Image (cartoon, rainbow, N blue to C red):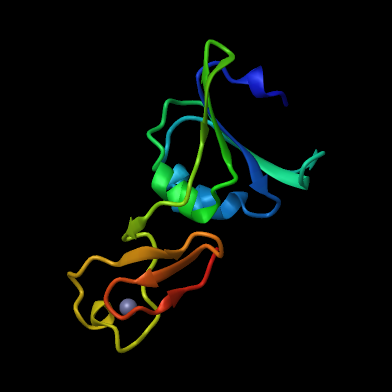
Length: 140
Ligand code: ZN
Protein backbone atom coordinates (compact mmCIF):
# COMPACT_ATOMS: atom_id res chain seq x y z
CA UNK A 1 0.00 0.00 0.00
CA UNK A 2 1.32 3.40 -0.91
CA UNK A 3 0.87 6.63 0.98
CA UNK A 4 -1.15 8.13 -1.86
CA UNK A 5 -3.61 5.28 -1.75
CA UNK A 6 -5.74 7.41 0.55
CA UNK A 7 -7.29 10.49 -0.96
CA UNK A 8 -7.95 12.62 2.06
CA UNK A 9 -6.76 11.90 5.52
CA UNK A 10 -3.77 11.54 7.76
CA UNK A 11 -0.77 9.29 7.67
CA UNK A 12 1.32 8.75 10.75
CA UNK A 13 4.75 7.70 9.60
CA UNK A 14 7.93 6.61 11.39
CA UNK A 15 6.12 4.95 14.26
CA UNK A 16 8.45 2.67 16.16
CA UNK A 17 7.81 -0.93 15.11
CA UNK A 18 5.24 -2.51 17.40
CA UNK A 19 3.84 0.79 18.72
CA UNK A 20 1.02 1.29 16.22
CA UNK A 21 -1.63 -0.54 18.24
CA UNK A 22 -0.86 1.54 21.29
CA UNK A 23 -1.24 4.73 19.27
CA UNK A 24 -4.43 3.41 17.75
CA UNK A 25 -5.82 2.97 21.27
CA UNK A 26 -4.56 6.22 22.77
CA UNK A 27 -5.85 8.37 19.90
CA UNK A 28 -9.23 6.64 20.08
CA UNK A 29 -9.10 5.56 16.44
CA UNK A 30 -11.40 2.63 17.14
CA UNK A 31 -14.22 5.16 17.50
CA UNK A 32 -13.84 6.40 13.93
CA UNK A 33 -16.19 5.29 11.18
CA UNK A 34 -13.66 5.78 8.40
CA UNK A 35 -11.13 3.18 7.37
CA UNK A 36 -7.94 3.00 9.35
CA UNK A 37 -5.00 0.96 8.13
CA UNK A 38 -2.34 -0.31 10.47
CA UNK A 39 0.77 -1.37 8.63
CA UNK A 40 3.35 -3.09 10.74
CA UNK A 41 7.02 -3.81 10.31
CA UNK A 42 7.56 -1.78 7.17
CA UNK A 43 11.25 -1.81 6.19
CA UNK A 44 12.80 1.59 6.84
CA UNK A 45 16.27 2.86 5.99
CA UNK A 46 16.28 5.14 8.99
CA UNK A 47 14.71 2.88 11.58
CA UNK A 48 15.18 -0.69 10.39
CA UNK A 49 11.50 -1.37 10.83
CA UNK A 50 8.61 0.96 11.38
CA UNK A 51 4.84 1.01 11.65
CA UNK A 52 2.53 3.28 9.70
CA UNK A 53 -1.05 4.31 10.47
CA UNK A 54 -3.33 5.59 7.73
CA UNK A 55 -6.59 7.29 8.59
CA UNK A 56 -8.93 8.00 5.69
CA UNK A 57 -10.45 11.07 7.28
CA UNK A 58 -9.51 14.54 8.47
CA UNK A 59 -9.44 13.44 12.01
CA UNK A 60 -8.46 15.95 14.65
CA UNK A 61 -5.41 14.33 16.16
CA UNK A 62 -4.24 15.34 19.57
CA UNK A 63 -0.69 16.31 18.65
CA UNK A 64 0.29 16.74 22.28
CA UNK A 65 -0.62 13.17 23.07
CA UNK A 66 1.14 11.91 20.00
CA UNK A 67 4.22 14.01 20.76
CA UNK A 68 4.23 12.64 24.24
CA UNK A 69 4.14 9.03 23.05
CA UNK A 70 6.78 9.55 20.42
CA UNK A 71 7.97 12.92 19.11
CA UNK A 72 9.72 11.20 16.21
CA UNK A 73 6.46 10.31 14.49
CA UNK A 74 5.78 12.27 11.30
CA UNK A 75 2.22 13.45 10.73
CA UNK A 76 1.35 13.80 7.03
CA UNK A 77 -1.86 15.52 6.00
CA UNK A 78 -3.19 14.13 2.72
CA UNK A 79 -5.48 16.06 0.41
CA UNK A 80 -6.51 14.84 -3.04
CA UNK A 81 -3.95 12.06 -2.78
CA UNK A 82 -1.04 14.42 -2.10
CA UNK A 83 0.86 15.27 1.04
CA UNK A 84 -0.04 18.91 1.67
CA UNK A 85 1.54 19.22 5.06
CA UNK A 86 4.06 17.44 7.24
CA UNK A 87 4.03 18.17 10.91
CA UNK A 88 6.94 17.50 13.19
CA UNK A 89 5.97 16.68 16.71
CA UNK A 90 7.64 17.75 19.88
CA UNK A 91 7.39 16.77 23.49
CA UNK A 92 4.62 18.82 25.08
CA UNK A 93 5.44 20.78 28.22
CA UNK A 94 2.42 19.36 29.93
CA UNK A 95 0.01 16.48 29.42
CA UNK A 96 -3.42 16.34 31.00
CA UNK A 97 -5.42 13.16 31.51
CA UNK A 98 -3.35 11.05 29.18
CA UNK A 99 -1.73 8.84 31.77
CA UNK A 100 -2.46 8.31 35.43
CA UNK A 101 -0.10 8.73 38.33
CA UNK A 102 0.94 5.34 39.69
CA UNK A 103 1.76 6.56 43.17
CA UNK A 104 -0.97 5.17 45.47
CA UNK A 105 -0.44 8.07 47.90
CA UNK A 106 -0.79 10.73 45.21
CA UNK A 107 -3.81 12.99 45.58
CA UNK A 108 -4.96 11.94 42.11
CA UNK A 109 -5.29 8.37 43.38
CA UNK A 110 -7.54 9.53 46.20
CA UNK A 111 -9.56 12.32 44.60
CA UNK A 112 -11.37 11.05 41.52
CA UNK A 113 -12.17 14.46 40.05
CA UNK A 114 -8.65 15.82 39.87
CA UNK A 115 -6.98 16.08 36.46
CA UNK A 116 -3.94 13.91 35.97
CA UNK A 117 -1.29 16.45 35.06
CA UNK A 118 2.28 15.59 34.14
CA UNK A 119 4.98 18.12 33.38
CA UNK A 120 8.06 17.69 31.27
CA UNK A 121 10.97 17.51 33.71
CA UNK A 122 13.80 16.54 31.37
CA UNK A 123 13.45 17.06 27.63
CA UNK A 124 16.65 15.20 26.85
CA UNK A 125 15.71 12.07 28.73
CA UNK A 126 11.98 12.52 28.02
CA UNK A 127 10.99 12.36 31.66
CA UNK A 128 7.64 13.53 32.92
CA UNK A 129 6.70 14.09 36.54
CA UNK A 130 3.34 14.25 38.25
CA UNK A 131 2.39 17.85 39.03
CA UNK A 132 1.18 16.85 42.50
CA UNK A 133 3.60 14.27 43.89
CA UNK A 134 6.55 14.56 41.48
CA UNK A 135 6.41 10.84 40.72
CA UNK A 136 8.14 9.96 37.48
CA UNK A 137 6.02 8.71 34.65
CA UNK A 138 7.60 5.72 32.92
CA UNK A 139 8.08 6.50 29.25
CA UNK A 140 6.04 4.81 26.61
ZN1 ZN B 1 1.14 11.85 41.51
